[in-house]
Each structure stands twice: as C-alpha cells, then as structure tokens.
Image 1: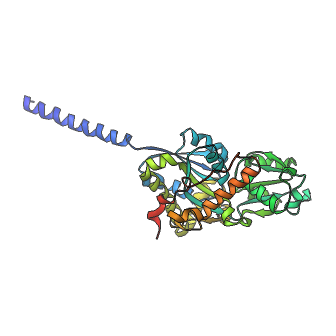
Image 2: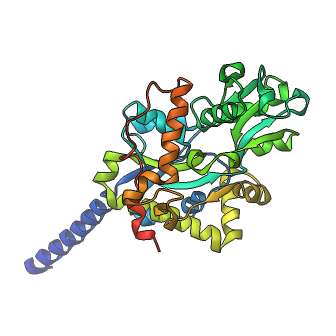
Image 3: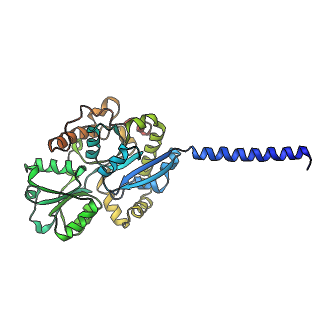
Length: 339
C-alpha cells in the first residue's frame, strides 16, 4: 500500500468513525421521559404503551413507573423525577396545587361511571349512604375517594366525622374485606369490581356524581416543564389519542393488550373499561372536558377542580381554596386533534 492509499484508508476510517460517533450522539440526544401510571384497571393508555406510541410520537427514551395511588406519585412529580403521571384523580392534583406546585392537566382520560364507588359487605347492615354512620370504611386518604366520600355523605346529611375512615392502599382492602376489619370500601377498579365479585354491594358509583363535580382520571405534568417542551407534550397527547382510537377500531386487540398489562382476563378487562366514559383527543377542547380559550373556565374539568377544592377545604385536607386554576388546565396541547 503506497502513501496515497494509506491516506485514503485512514480518511475513510475516520469518516466511518465520525459517522458512528455522530449517530451515537444523535441516539443519545433523545430526551428521557418517565411516564407514571396507576393500576386503574383496563385503560386505553395501556394500548399506547403496548404499541410504543409514546416512544414514536415523542421520539424519546420512554420509561414507565407504576404507582399504588395518586398521592404516592405527587412527591415524584414535585421532585421532577417524573415527567407525566396518568390515571391520577383530581383531589391529589388539587392538593398539590394548593401547596404551590405548578401542576397542569394535559389530557383528561376518562370519567368514572361504574368503575368506582362505595361497596359494602352484605352482613354490615348498610343499605345506603346514611347507613355508613358509625361504620368503618377503607379509603385511600387524599385520593379521589376523599372527595367522593365527602360529597356522598353531605348529600345524605351524614356528618363526615361520624364515619371511621381507615387509610389503606387498594390491594390491602381485599385482605381487610376478608378478615372483617372493614364494613365498606370506597375504591376504584380493579378492587371495586373484585369486592363486588366477592359478594359486596355497590351503594354508590361515581356515575352518581355531576359532571362538574365528578371523578376523572387525568394525565398531568409540571406546567413550567410543559411550556418549555410543547412538542413533547403534543406528542404525548397524540399517543394517548391513538391508544383511544385503537381501542375503538381494534377492540379485540386493544382489550387483549389491556388484559395482559393488568393481569386479568379479557372479559374482566372489558367489564372494567365499560365503567368509564372515555375521552378522545378531539374531546379535550370541548366543554364536557377542558374547553378551549375563554371556555376553559366553564368546562367540566375546571369546575371539578373548583368544586373538589371546596370539598377538600371543608374537610380539612387543604387549608384554603386556590384563587384560580387558570394555569392548571391545558387543552392547548390537544388543539391540533380537534376535528
């Protein structure tokens, strides 16, 4: 090999190495996104996960983290160790906002109808909400259940303090139910359905709540982070909408993926999904979800934030009602999904 050939070979090697390094650098430049979620039973976002739609739409390195409840996820969000949190109820979000954390709803996933509520043991003698007085009810304190219980008790004119609340995670409720440590539980699927299957009677479901003071599962993010990364948020909500669309159009495949994720049978997944009013990407900017522009303040989501804050304040969960939720409802990221 002469000198010219050696120079050409070295140059070629350097070019290949440069391309490899550039390619590796490009791969490493993908943003890291951590998506938190709860086990709320079958849900379209599980299809988004199974089909890698989050990775595709955000072009990011996506990791997933399971939380036992909303309150458990808030500390992770507060410390910026979590990018998005899905399947979270409104009360933990309101509590965080009241504490000064800049959290915002980027997508309202669904409204609970028959997938959550109050279930009682037949032998407890409880036939309606008024019968809860003096009884022991399992609850995830600070979760959506705190708002629901306070609302149902107020409607029935039952003093909030007259019911003994036992704070426990949903999986613990199954054991306490069997041992007789509780008379009732206010919880969501899959435990809500499991307790009914075990002989429990539902005396209230979340479908009994009005739309403007209702029980929703939402996806949230740090509002400041979202403003700084609008493309990632738009990709995130697009992936959620695609999971919803696949649930509609490829029902059997979607249910199979949900069942696999939650570890239940397809019929159980189907039953759990039937307990929700699901929202598409196009629904996000409508009045029944988050509205848009001036309509945000009169949307069902915004009104629920206000009404939830009032209830949480009345039962001592938060010290004061936030003056405004203007920065906590963000339908703008779904604007391009509106039809």
